[in-house]
Image 1: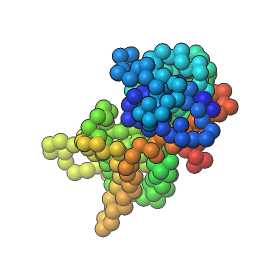
Image 2: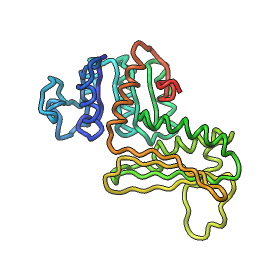
Image 3: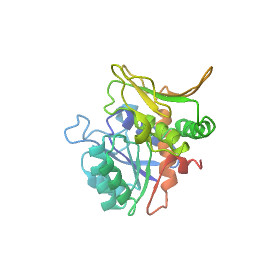
Image 4: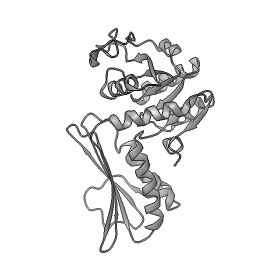
Length: 263
């Protein structure tokens, strides 16, 4: 498969480029970055000490050389890339978070024309964790207070993280509820006693934390914690490649990582 990478100069972009070049069945054929990026015009794999012949560009027409684009950028950039993928018939793996309802609707509409895997977290381990959370929430469906904790590096611009939101949604769905109806997003001042059935969220931003997530089920006399910690972005990259492979041969459709992994 011919793979394009968005945000090629960034930390995640470089991790993806490295993962693609190390694979035996994928080939890097396009590397995108924003206009004015300092790495434009340079070889996409120069940071690895070798040359690929693929130059980093801000021209979306480069997508004509790819079968699938992997995108971990910002919502506004991903939506522009999405339009170009539809134009050129290129499938897309979207790991970007922070989309509003209009952005999510645009992704759903585009999936009528190209194959898309859209997930708040591409890590295989995180998606296994989501499955465990669903099981736990169905068992611990009364008498337990739920709190979703997440921590990320100080560069992250959205909060709570897309993964934390998905974890909350999994628990709410297992309880037959909508997350927006039972979420407690902030606490400040005299809040009063906690309401039964709430799902609380706690957020840390600091340093170079790649991504920590814990869901607490707090009962009387016991506490169950389900945790996933990322020590590098390699897990996100490998999951993204699995998602790209899943899309091979698909002409349309919107999928998530639970589907990709058969969960």
